[in-house]
Image: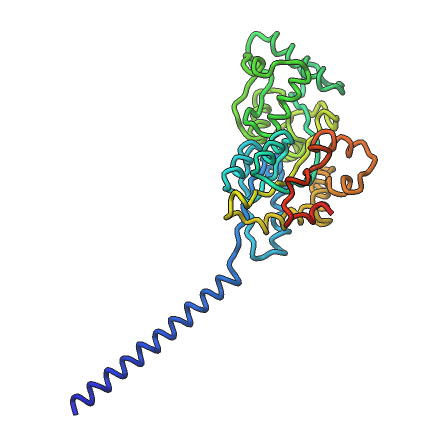
Length: 338
């Protein structure tokens, strides 16, 4: 009798254990199904501060994520040089930058693929309202820089110019402009009137405001900081061919970094180059600043419009006659160039 009762208890415990195991398996299976079909995919993007500081990327992120609820877009905002370094190391899936010379090297070294030009605006030389170097009214960038150098060198003390000094797209452009004006940048940057603290665009503008200095800025960040009342600097030279500023998207090469979220990166570029994405860029700033902070580049280039700006972009930002030579195009992103 006691043995029979003991056997029943053993059987009862076995059934309970089996039932508990089945419940556990169901829960685990449900978790796997949930994680498989509903997990959020992270898309990491390194970007230049001149895109991020304007607030444009917040608008684009919101619009994109509203259509792609399983993708979490995250930005790392730094200078172009560092943004590209993040991409080289495989720390991001996509980079948004504005330095054609650095982008070309990035492609040639095999780190990036399927470059696509997405937008443009202009750099501008800004400075204090009293304009001590007397560059107001000039349309020639070289002449303006010569006057700034002369003024700086004739001062007994104090700074005249502040540079990003961070290997960003803006800094690269600045060095190019000094070279065009026939100045040795290495020598120039060591002179007493030249400051190079190595900050982002916003930080540089705030420092220029504080110390009444001249600097090179992208138009978008300058207009935002001006409108917000954070600076009272004056833009002296704008929309000049020598000051063209072109933004590109480059996908990280998945053959080097197999963990890269290649598919979502390409999809994000497709969104940027779509009619909706381009319109978001065109409209951004119109209402608040009275003008667009960025201009879409996709349609003008696609139609090869016989306008000056298309020729400027091709001259400044094309490689071998193309925004992305065929050998750097991943076949999975070929639709970007239709």
